[in-house]
Image (cartoon, rainbow, N blue to C red):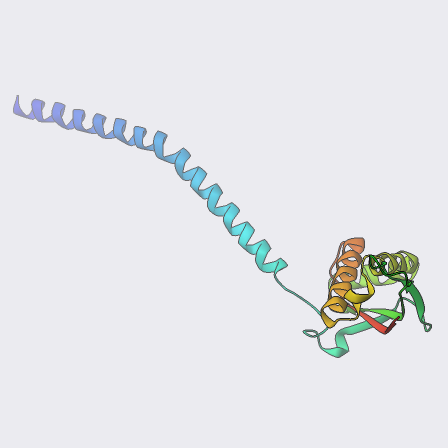
Length: 174
């Protein structure tokens, strides 16, 4: 009789253990699954940020990896500047504009041949960018940096790539 009672007690404890294990599985597995998804999303976001955080510009790339393309050709081109309120004089920039391409970028081989066909679009970006800035803004070093950064951003958006790493403006402002 004692052996029978012990067997019944052991069976009852096994049954309770199975029921509690099932309850734990039902409650913890979905929560764990959601936690895993959250961790995966955070890891993906960190990886994307790490990859997009690689800032390439003409200063961080060796000279032998740069390809210089003159947007304005060998000549200088005149670009109108935005009128300063209250100033009746027209101001303009007489400049030659070139871009620096990263030869080691993944998109270089595919997109570099397209630049020649898109020179007019690039000139339009340069023209419209100059028209956003006044003479007082572009004669300062910070203003020239803003103009170059604005042009660079628009050109990178045009090609949907960051293989263009710098815009160089050689000229004067009048």
